Image (cartoon, rainbow, N blue to C red; front, side, top):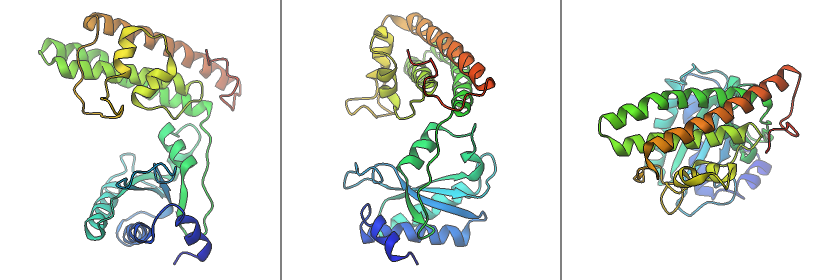
Length: 273
């Protein structure tokens, strides 16, 4: 059972009913999932005290080890959370990671942000878990984003040739966001998501970037909102993506050189303009 200090702390973020549902998930995962659970933290809007009344209880499950695709354990944990949500009426979701995901050079911005927000849930009395986003992480993450953009350079024209204009527009929009996100990561900014990432990277990006930034619907976070064709046509959009890609590649190369020279922080990296 959690000690009195832990309960007092977590109940600043969760009601007793919500806390009980979270512990139900923890207990069932420990009993049923074939992986050693190391830590559980509350993250997301409730951890940041920005939750709506109907917001989910987001739990970060840190296992000792998982397979690269995190399966079957991640899926099993999700099924447990769904079952607890049905039984309790409390919307609980889980995100499963492992200790290797926390190593320098393997940390994603979403994981670093989740840990920064994280409120310890289990074990009782455990301290917060904070990790920096390092130059090694930025180099690794941007390589993954550039791989996805390279896929998009082939996929979007194929979709357009097949007459699927909306899917082609969505793919181009997503690649613009990926590249702006990558540029931000190279200067140490991990928080902006979706259209906010485009706006945070440049306020003078031209019509294609403005289109991408405003394409998530009025709330600004609707992934499935219809995406209109880009202004100026797809040729202009493809050219904008290529310009952004070239800039990210150059900035990543500069940071890689700094990492090779022993850089340990993204502060004063000379990549913030």
